[in-house]
Image: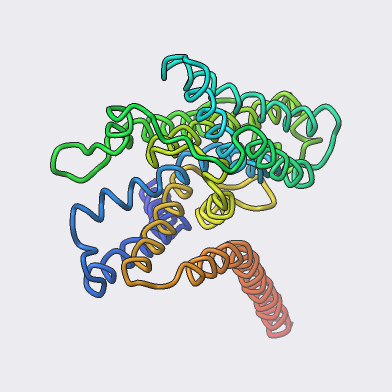
Length: 344
């Protein structure tokens, strides 16, 4: 019993999630020592407020990828939401609460449209969401043009940027923690979440054990749409500006963070803790590089490099483990053969 507990504990502290947090702590320590102004409460505030959009969208995205699918339209959904929110606020005369509620419906519609094409028509999610990535961004331009709307209530925009006391931690992080807790419980402690792992390994096997494949995938895409719309509202209030380009390029960072956090691009593997670590690692690294005045083009290269690394590294590790296993099996056969020869 004690041996099993010790082995389990060793696996936890040497697992992928733990390694991500070790690297995160190393990046923080190195940045505190080598980057000017990094070690301050201002850094905590700016860093966390920057990772909020990635952290939010990464939650449903992790579930989508674990189920064996992908959603590339999340940033465009956020941009379309921002555009609709700006036009409604400027032209409709509705109060801001109603405008925000109607804006969230955009995410429901976008996610349901993706889900319909993928689950009802059986189209591949990669092709569908590449198409809707362009479609939703184009609709955002149709809705608001190349204009910006910037007359949102100051008390609301100030609230989004407000901090908890002198800690530097944004108040909005409380809401983010609620979203993380919701998706963690959904994935790890419900039959629906456990069914997603089976779905990622084999849709046929998942159907055989009672998982409603189409139903599960449809609601996952609705979830990514809704959370992307939340991010669209957040970006609009944070920037105090609604525009069609809000959230541009966000999907690359989200997918890189999710894969870096240990979610398999082939589905069937991953957890929420690892994804949170992946998001914080990419956010911390890019923020430190910005403080060090590294050009934005280099940051794109860093994000792309991490994305490639997060896809290639698990395959290389699996290949290495398989080679070691085969070598041990071969050595065992050789020992048994030698032992048999000596006995004879």
